[in-house]
Amino acid sequence: MTEHRAGGTGPPDEYIEAEIHRLLAEDPDVAEQGITVVRRERALVLYGEVESPHRREEILRRVAERFPDVPVTSDIGVIRTQAPTEIEQLP
Image (cartoon, rainbow, N blue to C red; front, side, top):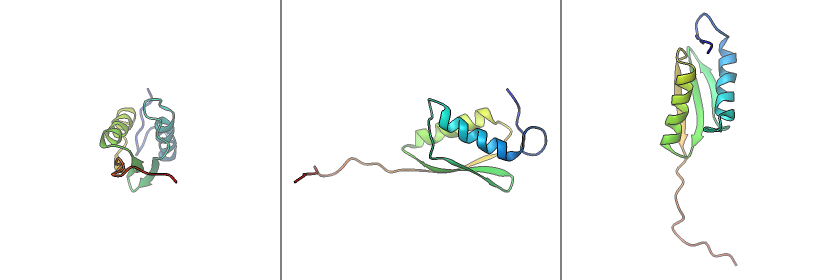
């Protein structure tokens, strides 16, 4: 495994951003295409929405596991999906 560092050795940050995006989109256990990776100062920020707090934690865990030396912050929201309170009647 190649080691990535935001400040010195390893590929430039834009490559890390692309690798994180690819990891999230191509990993069959994640398959998340709605997450955007943006560089802010010395950290990368993950933006987007997912369907549960567990899913958000899994995404952050996988990114931290793959890129342990890259500071990553999360701005991933959870979509509040609720079952309908009434039965929808179609005409």
